[in-house]
Amino acid sequence: MTTRLLTVLVVSLIVLAGCLGGGGPATGDGVDADDGGAAPADRDDLSVAATDGLLRDAGSFTATWSYSTTEAGETATITNAYQVDLRTNRSLETFTMSGPEARTDFETFVADGSAYTRYETDGEAFYQVRPQDDTSFQSAVDRGTLSYESVDDAQLVGTETFDGVTVDRYEYSDLSTWRQIGAGAFGSGGNVTVTDFTVVILVDSNGLARQTAWTLTGETDDGETVSVEWRYEITGVGSTDVLDPDWLDEARAQQSNGSR
Image (cartoon, rainbow, N blue to C red):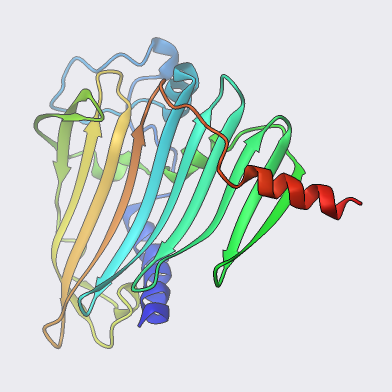
């Protein structure tokens, strides 16, 4: 079941991201970061600022991207997390695939002109060290790339606290485009009738989308409930410190032994 769920997850990621309109710049109709990222005067209209500029100005952040599929009562998730500190030019990326049997596939730590990567297979760790001067900043930002124009009719439903800051909560739901989709999106044996499609966007006072998440729930011809979720969160803005991973000495030792 694990292999099937992960296959379903990857297939649905490709199909559904394309339907939502992902791949465009995550700027929407928002204000330009060069204008200070000020929040729009009309809070009722969704307006998201340029992520790139705001995060560069902040100096550090943590970005977490995840995609999960639930089928037959089991959930498989891919998570890609980035800790980025532009002030010290350090970053740590973690990529994890989890299901009934969880495993961490790799971690990459960038500091002092080198990238250290730890791979784990069947409980055994392997390391790779290579020159790399820059952090994973662009990869972290690109993970959250989404065309907000596709949901610019999102409605402001209130305010809440996210990662210690006040954010406006926008929601969007429109089933008209999602009434019937092919089995390939969920990997099931028959068509899926979509019963719920919701996008939630949390925007702080600077216009930075702190969280963007969409969930799609459906029912197969056999009455089975299936769902997928895409989520991107930005936390620790200006306060993320990238520490040495606990396996760094082992990676350096392996590099030293291999160079003899």
